[in-house]
Image (cartoon, rainbow, N blue to C red; front, side, top):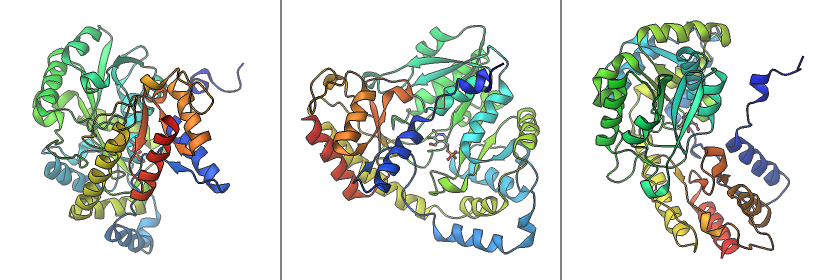
Length: 396
Ligand SMILES: Cc1ncc(COP(=O)(O)O)c(C=O)c1O
C-alpha cells in the first residue's frame, strides 16, 4: 500500500508559488533577485479595511465560529456588491464565503463533478484549475489558444471538444496568465453556446476590476441570464483590494449547489476566519477609490512592461488588457545559445533567467503553454524596468 495516495501524489507543485519561493530564498541569501512570479498586488490593504479588522479583533463575538457559509451580513453585502459591480442579481442563500477564491475553485468542482466528467479548460490556464478538476475526479480537457488568436477560445473550438461527458466550462476574463479580456460579444456567444448545450459554466471573476483602456469586464450570467441555473461565479477580495493574505473569496451558485458546497465546507474548514470576514465586509461595502488608484498604477506598469518586452528581439508580446500579467512568447529564442547555454524549452529559459540575470519569471509550461512565460507587473516601477532590462541584456 502506498504511503501517499495516488490522487494526492499526482498533484504537481504550484509552479507560480515555487518560482516565487525560489526567488524569495535567493533574495534572503542576499542575491539581488527581481521577482516577476507573484500573482499578487504589491500594495498594502487599504487602511479602512485594516481598521475594520483591528476593531473586529477586539470584539469577543468575533473570537468564535461563524456560520459555515459566512457571516449573514457579509453574504448580504456580497449580494449588493455583485449587483453594483457586475449587474448580477442573486440571493444571500446562493453565496458561500470561502478561504480565498482558490478554495472556491476547489469546492465548485468537488460539488459539480462525478468521476470521468469532463471540464473544458482553455489554455493558457491558471495552474490551479487542472489540479482542482483532477482532485474532484474530473478530466480537464485542455483547449489550446495562442497569441495569434489573442489567447481567446472560440465557440467552434468549444463545440469541437464537446462530448456526452462534458459537464462544465471553466471561463476566466480578465485572464491569469495571459492578461486578456474577452469582448462582451464573445462572452455572450460562449454563454449562449453553454446554455444551449446544458454545459455548466464555472466563471472566475476575480480580476473584474482590473481592466485597462477600452477593455471592460462582462459577467457571463448577466449577458446570458438563461445560465442562471447552471452557472457558478467565483470571486474574492484578494486582487481587487490587495488582500491576498487575508484569504477570503466566495462562490455564487444555484441554491442546491450552494447548499452542497456549504455541507462540504462544514467538514473541511467550518468557516472562514471571522476577522477576515469583517475586513472583507468593510472592503465590499466601501467605495472603489483605492481600487481605481491601484488599477491606474497597474495599467501604467503594464504599458511599460509591454513596451520593454516587445522591444527585445525574438520576443512577441500582446499588450495586457487586464489583470497584472504579460504573457510573452520566447519561442523564437529557443534553441539559440544564450550566455553559454542553449535552452530548448521555456522552462530551461526561465531557469537561465534566474541563474544568469537573477530575474524570476514563470515558464509557460506551468500554464499549459510551452514557449511562453508569465511576468507579473505587480511590482515597483524601478524593479520592473530593471528586471526587464536585465532580461533584455541576457537575451540579446
Ligand atoms: C484566476 C485566479 N483565480 C483565483 C485565484 C485565487 O485567489 P485567492 O485564493 O487569493 O482569492 C487567483 C490567484 O492567483 C487567480 O489568478
